[in-house]
Length: 330
Ligand code: TYM
Image (tube, rainbow, N blue to C red; front, side, top):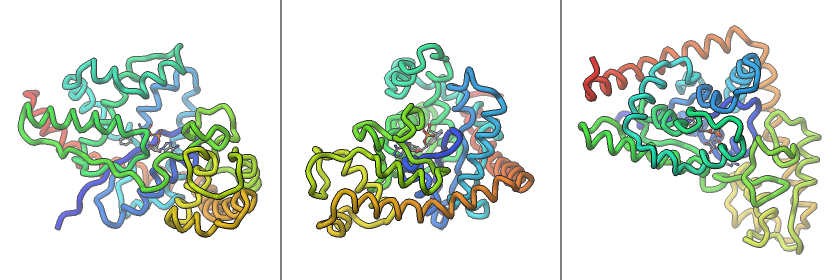
């Protein structure tokens, strides 16, 4: 039987944090065996926020992200792994889909509202059309599933609406993709403000753990993480800081929340933090070492990127041809 298709992507923001890893990338690695997987570095999306940064920075961030995802476990012989800008059909399909998306529905996207507020000096049209390019990414490969963190849910719903509308207007063309979110780790919160999502754009460097952080930094950040009053280890709405640490423990250890609460039943907050630090360090250290090694393999990485883009192009071209034909383009 044919394998179902999975698509997901990540922006090249330098290093990734444990939110990206637990919410998305760790699952991508697991899905490679079972599904026909396409994973992309969403470098075109990054242009929406790179007005004042140097071209060389974006270039090195793309390269670093490619190395990082390989270090995390993406395997180019099991999945198609490429940079979005290397497959021209992404922007071509995005243009067509722009014309099948209403201004009002794009305007409702909360990420657009948040980003426009945060970067009021650069509210560009690309930022507005961002989720439609994301829909093109997904629909181009006819994905059945999209593994993402919860913050991307609204964008996925828009992709589904666009696919349904197009299918109705013409004839069945796109699969209507489903979201795949992990049971734990779909939303990792800031270590310093546990009601906020963990995010690289946070000015407080202690609020997130990067996959490139060294062991001492990881231990220090977890030690400083905000916990709540009381001393009982439990999941609770009133204890967002503690609940976040427990979720991180669950996601790394792959133990159920109930089991983790059991393990730490009679432990102190300090003991939980110590155990969590040891777990995170043990998990991330080999990834970091592999990442450093891959960064030196420039020719190999460039070849993987080119081969990935060629493979992706092959599928993307067929879908774009089909769409052009359906809408009446020559
Ligand atoms: P990006 O680069 O912001 O994030 C990549 C993935 O990480 C997840 N994520 C989190 N998960 C849990 N906790 C967090 N604190 C956390 N922060 C981020 C995100 O949900 C995402 O899965 N627009 C997308 C990239 C993209 C894309 C696509 C994704 C472009 N095209 C097509 C899916 C399908 C983005 O900026 O993700």
